[in-house]
Length: 306
Image 1 (tube, rainbow, N blue to C red):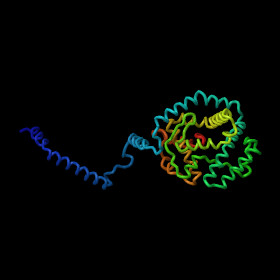
Image 2 (image 1 turned 30 degrees about the horizontal axis):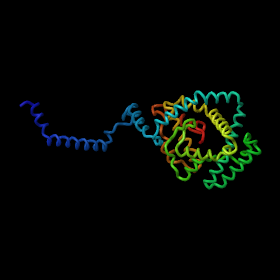
Image 3 (image 1 turned 60 degrees about the vertical axis):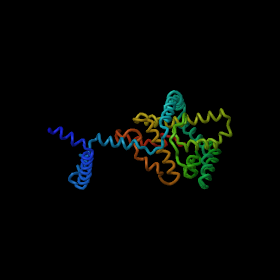
Image 4 (image 1 turned 45 degrees about the vertical axis):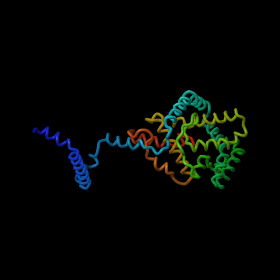
């Protein structure tokens, strides 16, 4: 009887195959434990894998994002729409606005829009049971409105009344409301479910809603948007050009900026900021310098507070 016939007969026995498999498994476990306990069998760090292996591990780890984004496909569509709107409408208007407006005039316009948001901050400080900040915000609004010609000149800050921005999204956060999923709102841009609701409530608190007609509100809102786009245009362009995935980079910028604001308001970093600060916003294969640069850009210079 030839060797091939003997092997075929042996392998047909289910019990023998099971016994062989069990013995092989037991040997693997014992050998693995022995290798782990023997330092001489552990290769030095430089020999534990190539750069390709390390990048593969980083890619796998980066796929697990701490940012809640369950509707990413829809958000990407919204971002695409916003990008086209920005390219053909908002950016040209912003460039024209910057071309005809001197820098000091641009700053004055921004101060006017900032002054219009003071009543919103006052209400939210009141809701947060912060009487000192609420009182200072109300005094700041009155002083800049009267003495600063509607906010064109900031006379409150030199008088010891700095700005303490507060919005309803932050108020919801203060009382424990989670952020909810990440959203890219058409025209308005990055947000979360909580901040989108907060923005709607803040809109109801805006004084221009009750002092101006619908057309006037549109003019004010459009002017505010163009002013903000002009202020943050260069940072947005830099982020877009340096990112492998602009959507992911913008999402990270939004979350880091927003979490930084909320941490400043509550006196400490939030769980989301701690868990996501080490997450690459685009592709871990980028150099650490590029990643660090993009993270440094994740500030109010890129994503205006909502």
